[in-house]
Length: 59
Image (tube, rainbow, N blue to C red; front, side):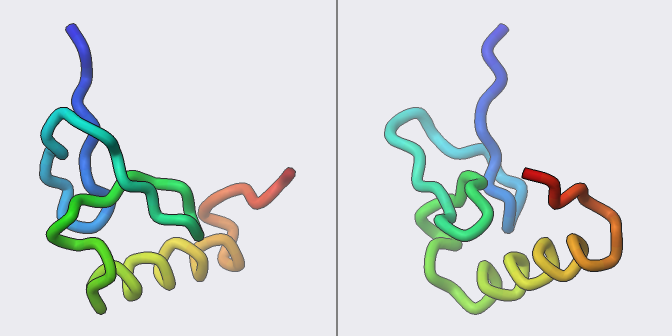
């Protein structure tokens, strides 16, 4: 079974086809959320969590 990709903003499945990726956090984003304020807020949440120790920021 192939797992479909989900938008990191709205958590909806992204239909088959080329995936659009958020260039800051490298997660898939659907065309409905791409470039919206909601996407920008989610990116900020993800990046803020790096400073709080929730996600490892090691390279």
